[in-house]
Length: 148
Image (cartoon, rainbow, N blue to C red; front, top):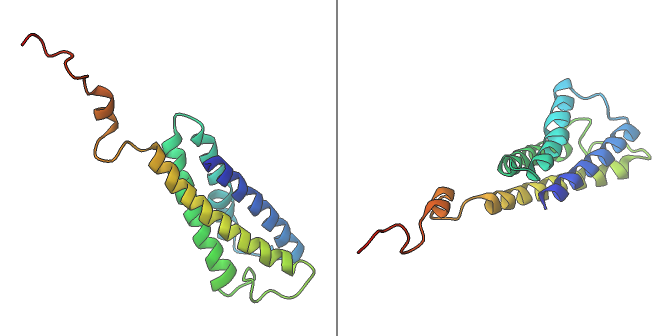
């Protein structure tokens, strides 16, 4: 499920990137682009890659943090902070509807991705009340106790 969430988020980012280009909203601060490339785009791809390996917990944590960071960034810069990226202050144009819809979809995808990451962490974590070591080292009843 985490791999699907990361793939969905990545697809939404690509669609929104096309809307950015179409709407000509490309002159953003350099740190915005670095954040988008690193946290919003590459981190979920790496998380999805790790989820399918023995490093699944690391992948789940990366998915949680990247999707949380993406969600906060998306909501802040598309809906709250005034600027060229804000859906409420965009100049009208042929790409305005696509930009607005894709901004909503990106925020939704990152929110869902965060929840999926939390669920993956729960599924990959040891049982509550014990540890992974307790579950694997605990001897079977009657084994190894010697004569009574």
